[in-house]
Length: 491
Image (cartoon, rainbow, N blue to C red):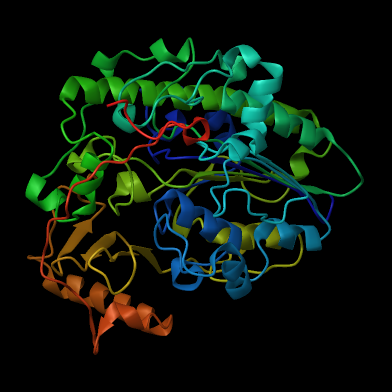
């Protein structure tokens, strides 16, 4: 067995934890993710500690939490991309290159600026939309469409329409073999097959099933909306104590989604996942044909989930399970158990340490020792923290997960929600009023952790800074094809 196995990271965008058939969802077909789960170990309590695209990706590529990256939402702080690397150290791909790996990455990177280098020897972008003509020309997928399939280059939104259509069920404007997922898979297969004698570290970062939900034929009609479960909601006033939820609903034109539309959206969402699952099957086939298949580490995960109507909400950026908890599968047939399921708390930040550990030079940074946990040489994490929104503002919120308990703390109003996830997995029965000691204990742990991280802005004196509860002004987001001069509606 090689001392330095190949490493393949496969990431989806906005895929909930509960969307893999073999893990309990009998309403979805995911034969290849089922196969990957059988090949390795599943973590049932895996989290995105900042559940939105940009900060989640920076935790992955740095091995650091937002308390160190400074990225608490989809905006990058002063100093930007280079300053984050300066604070945290070389990005993961660069770190793996220094360990003797051939590195490549394909798909969505969501850096700021959009084409910022993150250390891959080969980096092929497929970002979600294009703000300038130069960006569209520089995006590897959009350029492939323009050169190889010019008959489709007139399409403004290659992944489906956004803005007012963000949460409207759609059909892909492209056939299945021309979608961004199919393109990324083919690119990855070619890069995987290249051989210069070094082991390789590769990332395939799919854009789906991020909305708009626009699967290609025949996946758009794979699921009957009438057989989809309805969203699970608690009391609206409680669900919307996190003002980000109603604010985001309005932002993406999803403030009044009716039950039928919710079921239809879930059917299209499942169709997206089943299509991506088929693409992942091609990756698995390629790995399993290799002579070093048993010495190839595969990690599958998502950057965050989607409320999909649960808790009267859509999108992410919430610490309810549907948003913050993610699928998380790790396989290495040569070293770790196959078909195993684990309950320990893990998160995306741990993947930096996993990759560098299997490369033979562990560097955990702010993550836990995932390989040590899998091989029985490291203890599990006892407490997991999550953050969103700039500390010191009313948008700051946090999560503390310990055992079966989860605390959601909100600076806006100083509200707290406490859940026992074993007794109440859908989080519809908050119990902070009945168990104030547990709420106080977890709040104290949160404060201690922020102090240890030097996040002074989170405090007002010795206590966590809170603000009088305020409903946020509602607005809309417009995401048209600015690369072709489209900046809004016609009138």
